[in-house]
Length: 378
Ligand SMILES: Cc1cc2nc3c(=O)[nH]c(=O)nc-3n(C[C@H](O)[C@H](O)[C@H](O)COP(=O)(O)O)c2cc1C
Image 1 (cartoon, rainbow, N blue to C red):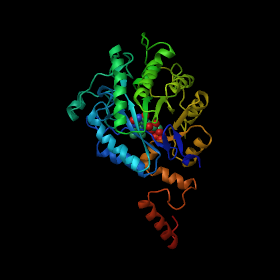
Image 2: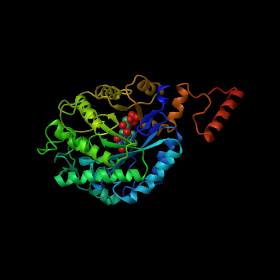
Image 3: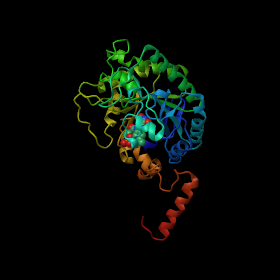
Image 4: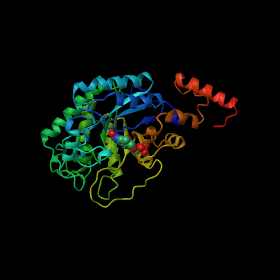
């Protein structure tokens, strides 16, 4: 069955096509993973996911979105991540880390504190001070947001170096996949979208100038990331803005990223902000899968579909119809960390809990027999 067909990418064997999408929890202190992150991510391995991503992990401290973001900008941050990765491996899952930089969306409050810029109130209540965000251009994300500092050549050089050292640390922590977070209006997306990049140097203006940094980041990561491990890019396949980044741009960029050793494009969309006229976002089940299908077909690169996927049949169809090679789920995994195991049963692949770890499956199967014996219909 499609969703449960193994996949090989470089030296990696994906046991199935189900990926837990990166989901920020905003519960780190100083960027460190802690027991909470261990428990949170481990649940998905016990639940049978093929690949599990950490949340967005900042490559430099000022690139955090909130004070609670995970980070990999110093060596102290390696050990706890390594423990997580090792546990995921022990349960038969692959481990992925999403490396990113928030750019002009840095210094933001956690969603439950308002998702607005950090200010004096945060300092008073939580001892969390605002900091200066950097971006391709001095353009704020939205009204009443802080104006970021336009990045200098030195900032760009440092950013690339920080991607390189974070990659080495990700290797030390034994992750199988790096996903570069270049979507949802964060720093690398701010570079390629014309909405947020009005630079006049070699990183702004034309398509090739606006995408230069992404190519350089891909090359620098590949220069230190082993050949048998995978490199994904999460892109916003379009801005849903008339004058923004379009799907055709993504296809063109995906072709170039492929030549730099990028294995797969994780196709999300939106998030750049801006005040231009907005196209109607076709929200609905698996609404971004069509983007993954087009990129896959036209750029001839593997893709991952994500967004409002929660039914096993829908996920299975995406793989079966070759719209994407992997399917990522986020909120449904929060709702049900065992989603892959239930999906296997729903698709008729597992009638006796044999996909479950025996320490769960043996008991659940026994209970099932008891239900039958007692004539209980459930
Ligand atoms: C709690 C939460 C945190 C998220 N954090 C991230 C993140 O760190 N990086 C990212 O690329 N997307 C993040 N997302 C977006 C998800 O990865 C996913 O693309 C989105 O939720 C759509 O998938 P869904 O409909 O299955 O939830 C987050 C989503 C949720 C619900």
